[in-house]
Image 1: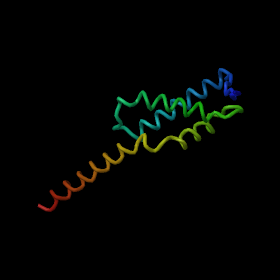
Image 2 (image 1 turned 30 degrees about the vertical axis):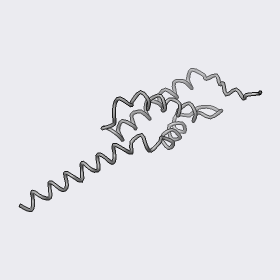
Image 3 (image 1 turned 90 degrees about the vertical axis):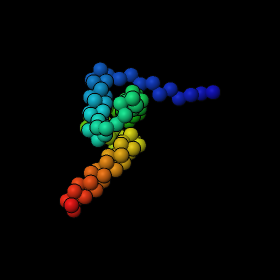
Image 4 (image 1 turned 120 degrees about the vertical axis):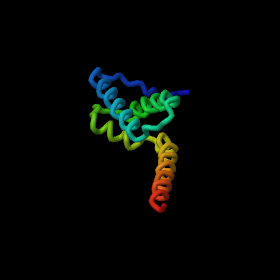
Length: 103
């Protein structure tokens, strides 16, 4: 059986750009989901590394293009559950804050 080898050698500058894209994307994820479960951060970080690597393409690596691709392809479910919980908490606060105004 023949398998296509996806091995690619990266220039040190490309690796630096990939690392900076990873850091920027991780910071964006943290900002979107400040109440995330920190026990799952390791899994998310590994998935994010793979996402960065899989979006590099075959040509020259450009920070802006790669960062845009990674942010656009981040799975929604990395933040979905926290957003729902936060929305429920905010709804509870709104409800309780409106109830004290009535009395």
